[in-house]
Length: 370
Image (spheres, rainbow, N blue to C red):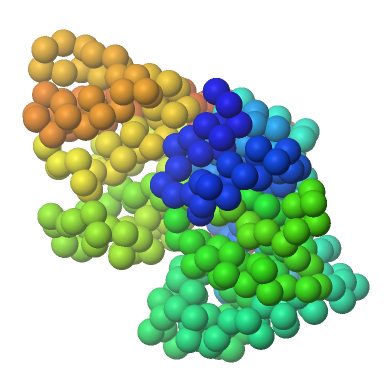
């Protein structure tokens, strides 16, 4: 598989593939960035879905950076708005979690750069110059529309600091010299702002190897659905996209998500209770997880069907959708296959966080959450 295929594998969107091809063909150094708020336990979306893509990027020769967004977390009221606690969890539990997830998925945690937000900002005039320059090239209405990147809605009543959040996120991209910016589809609006202002920046522009200003390429992976039943059903693809904040896996609803160190028993209990309507392929959380996470990670899955056990391959994922839609797979059989494969993926992570230093780091966050 070539660089372009590895970088674009298992994504919802690339902005734009043409820009990416030009960047690769012109032999530019490829520098990646993905940023995370610091709050509760890492779940499948943050720990597994994100690191699965980072593993692909590493194999494509991309320098990967994980940004631990302590100031953004403080602005968004995480961990009791205690900045020192946020920083402690960021460089402790979060860093440990991302490293073990990446190694489990075939990546190399020794070749990841972790950057704490406050370290990037400290005594860094260029950051704040860039922040202001981005703000001068963005209007208030657009910033207000972008606050869904922090799990909030445009109509929400918010303090003014939260309006700084999208601009800070865009400034992070340029200060980290990232020409490939990566996140779930819910971060799209910030990335589009970054692309729109890129050619107007003078303090920290992105440059290619010929010193020309370029736009960052934005790559967006799928956002895993939460295990809950949606507020309305049936629901269309367009409605799912519009309601992504309400429908996605969320650590604030622990019964609807799987954490990276859940026990086999917890995994089984949660998935058996999951919303999984027969013949439904548009909104079906267990099917969604198999399609977007299990098959890319494991390459295949064995599922019991009405005509006997069948192996579904990553490169023929549509066969799974066809068979489920046509009633060849019972919801319980789908769930049991998911339980088996997901437990297999998470087993080393579960064991890692139940001993030694990793257990202490997890326990620290558990105490704070309480």
